[in-house]
Length: 370
Ligand code: IPM
Ligand code: MG
Image (cartoon, protein in one colour):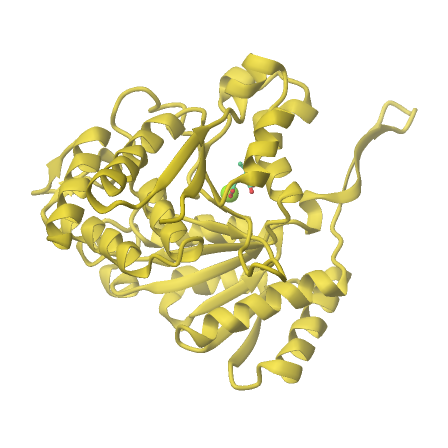
């Protein structure tokens, strides 16, 4: 049995608590099912800054490059508000994305039946929701140069960020969108702001051309990103795959998260291009929620987005489809049983902590495998 090398980067805030629940799953899968996971741990974010003055060390970066997959918790918190911009906690995550070339960020928003009532939207709007936001992750305004604050010398300063996309970057993310759509409901909606942004004009052109050249069997529509945000809360079930740039994808995926009941529910996978020789891709899996410093350390965080991110890891990095399906079913079953972390609480449900819901998911997984 081949070993499967995982690097765990729990990070800050609720990251370590959520990761501890995934570690239980890994241990169980190794002990009971011979899964052959080998884990290493590293530091990222504020804790890395406190330890070595960098938001991720070169040594941990090397480990990430060598791993089959990276599991990432969360970074940041008010404790590090004052640290220099270059070494702020988020810089560690951005470095991982950039150096591992993880250009494709999959953010599925699925509304579990048991949670349809927990969304801030009406039940009929979210019930049965299953959409996928595909966010471009290594380009756009996050990384464009110049990126600076300059002194204009007249008592004024100027803050500059640069939104920039090249053809190949749009082509490759569009290709992933169409490929994914073919495995789902065969629909892609591309979102940009071509009415005010040149990069939006190019985005629209390249997505259209890519579609015409190779994917005309998939249904393609275009929407301005602001209208897309509105449609996401009006009638989200009209979408299948949404493909959009780095910044719009950041915002739209937070909106989509709330459709599912809680930000604590949304997992994500960040993937690189397949290696031409081995076919394997670099990959990092992380919950969409942040470090939630206000509830960290209290044992009340919802670990489901982290656990569902591990399910995505099983699916996309190790082709363990059966195991991934089983883990997703275990999450759904535990919710059906009425267990809820505080963020998901509603009347008649049983409030439990991070460890309890994690234990319940492990037990359910084993029961489903028996
Ligand atoms: C996300 C987060 C990150 C982002 C932060 C932590 C840098 O909001 O993954 O959605 O903006 O990409
Ligand atoms: Mg975000």
